[in-house]
Amino acid sequence: MASRCNPHHVAFIADPQLVDPHTYPGRPWPLSTLTVKFTDQYLRRSFSSLQQELGPDSVLFLGDLFDGGREWSTQHSESPEGRYRKYDDRFWKREFHRFVKIFVDTWNEGDGHIRHPVGRRLLTGLPGNHDLGFGSGIQTPVRDRFQSFFGKSNRVDVIGNHTFVSVDTVSLSAMDQPDPETGSSGTGSGDGTQPNEHIWRETQDFLDRMNVHRGRAEVEALRMLGNQSEGRRFQHRAMDILEPSLAHTAAPEIAGFPTILLSHVPLYRRPATPCGPYRERHPPSSPNLEEDERNAIPMGRGYQYQNVLTPTISRDIVSKVGPNLVQMYSGDDHDYCEMSHHEFSGSPTEITVKSLSWAMGIRQPGFVLTSLWNPIDPATGQP
Image (cartoon, rainbow, N blue to C red; front, side):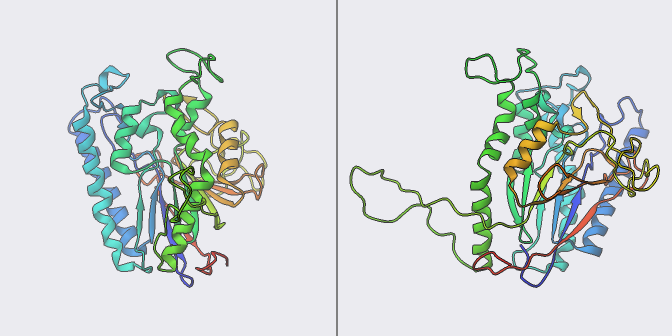
């Protein structure tokens, strides 16, 4: 959360996808070991330089932290692919410590740049399809493990006087897919159970209660700005014996900060929607084209992936995030893409962030650094 006079700098990191046996299956030793060594070294040095030279106030990861994380077995699940079943929960935890060594240990190198009394933020909980799987392919124990170590996947955070809404879109996408066990889709078979509900319900409930989550986060942010305590959760008053014994205080009102949406998978856009001049693999065919298939994110799906969300899922998310949506950030594609969603009120811009890794098909890996500027009155939350 920024003070009233300093901008807040946020670095977005997408798709580090730590190289593992899933990345290059069958690559022989010592080439496999050297690949891990040098990609890790590149990521660690890049992230360390980012902290030392730029010192962002917050760093937000946009998913796909591991490459084969969804495949590594838990105590209650195993990979659908037999060749990966030998990699167990202990292997996943070693990969987690590898992630910590590369990113968390070097995160502290930026502490000399602290500009705000609340300190710096590092958020890693947004999952990608390589972390969990995609849609109906997600196994609940795999998701539970990810959240236990990396944090909540669906969350609201106030950063730099902006409200960041992180949505687990890889799980939510199961709403648009048939149940792999029953083959049913839509609203279910009439017995009260909906297809894939155990996968998407948590995220849908989060979106359905967005006003509560946003209100609580924004009110707490204003309290911190004003050095106030959290306040009472329940009303302290005498009441009639027939009244409910616990009377909650009214739900907090939304302060109305500008909202930024985070999703691993980009939102839907028309096929051939151009990504702009900063796309590395396929620059624009010519300036100012309304359609440019080579420059666009391709429309496609396959085993445990989908290049963009469906129109239904995209509309549902945007409608529930609220009218203050001004920006979106996503990952997954590995290359840069910037476009405006004119189909939504305010035409919010979506930036798909490059992968930070040099092993993801991009010759010039990257990240995005954004400056947030929203000076407010701490008493009211208004500019």
